[in-house]
Image 1 (tube, rainbow, N blue to C red):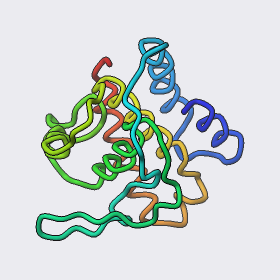
Image 2 (cartoon, rainbow, N blue to C red; image 1 turned 180 degrees about the vertical axis):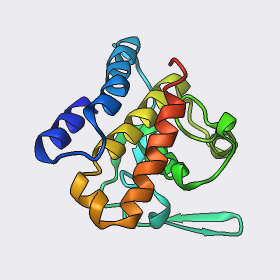
Image 3 (tube, rainbow, N blue to C red; image 1 turned 30 degrees about the vertical axis):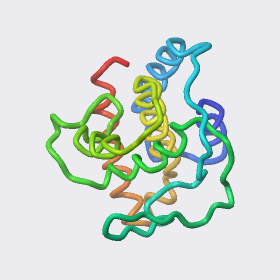
Length: 166
């Protein structure tokens, strides 16, 4: 995650000011020490798991586009899927330490069968949201209403998420 953020910062001028993202990044660095030498579940992962690669029907779900599929940490696909939650409205007090609405996360895990370290998951979701937020450049922000909306929603969720300690 940190390498991806460094790469983003070296290639484009982010819309987010350094004074806004540095406190989040500093907290992520501190939190990462908690997970040194931690293990988590490896599974066969889709590798590009989001709503556009799913067909949902009554009682069935079909995955599409398995070009990036391989064995990965289980949290990889969950983070990919959960990050879209920023576009769902909900009460501010229901946003948990990951930046996701707790109800939506609970619904996901009702049927999920693999053991997941929730602290690692929350850290990874928070990191993905931070990467996505920092990744919105000034140029993209100025040209796209969607990017402006995404930037604002990510900023709101990150502010709420970073109120909590991992």
